Length: 206
Image 1: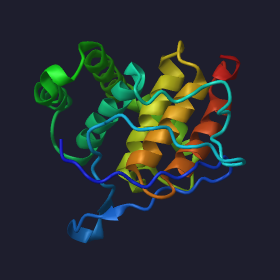
Image 2 (image 1 turned 180 degrees about the horizontal axis):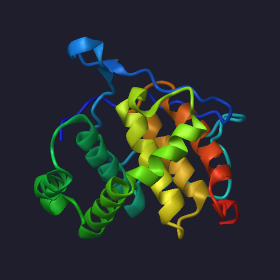
Image 3 (image 1 turned 180 degrees about the vertical axis):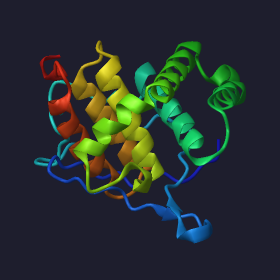
Image 4 (image 1 turned 30 degrees about the vertical axis):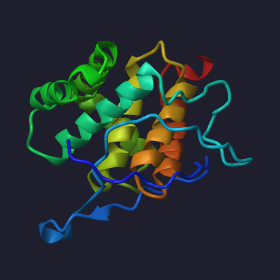
């Protein structure tokens, strides 16, 4: 997969719902797209700042070295490529495992593949939640990183019921901040906070 520099780490705010600023691709018609994410790597945790925490952050920590975190990044990269190219998902996932080889532990590869396939298969159920939560920002107009991160997170909120919703939101915010634009973390945080309240049998008790 192609790579691009990571965005500067910025704190998320629970009351902001602005999308990230897409980076111009020079595509015909002035279309803009997000930067392509780079391969995941271990990073030291950013320091928390008072009044600058994602919604419902307490009770869950982001484990940047954990299996689920790494799998989410690979899944997001696969969804990003699927969104931005004409490549088929099986082709993308096969190349993911082939390129990483022994450097990609099988449990991480298996989880990433399951997440990416799940999002792809249930897109018709996922996107309406995003549309309802952010009506001012049509999905086709969202930066591709934001769109991919949101779709992955909503899939987990709806169908990965064993994962605490706080962890899903925190992870999505951190990934958006790492790979997206300056306001990606705030936007993703705000949208997911709204979506959680609208999910039937809300996972807020998880």
